[in-house]
View (cartoon, helix red, strand yellow):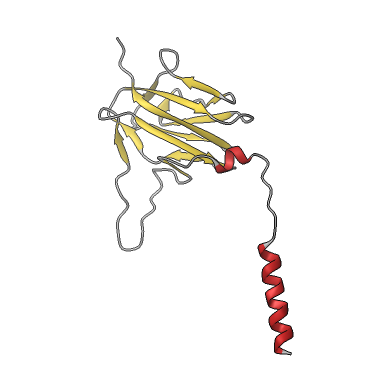
Length: 159
């Protein structure tokens, strides 16, 4: 009786390991890694037990803020709140070959989201410069899923 139970359990284990999975867009869900982005908004306080949450602010005057991410469905946020300038620009490369990417500014003017076409780059330059909303000390961006992207936020200086 013990041999039959053991044999049955072994058979179930072997069959469960032989399961085949399928992804519609392997290119977009397996390539790349999340860099300076997260599913948690930086203004949400998440603190590990016994410690306080780290300061999540990036002074844009020191360096541009580079980011990149892949998400099959969840919205991704920049890991840091961006501060240190009056005007900000952003460059976003949509690496997806099939999905449009929606980018949402937070505490910035203009507040309206913008979209980046598949396999395209969207750059602020002179046409779409972001400014901190009145009373805000920072700006931030989020990216709607599904997504596969990279880019950077930089200090825009009018000349």
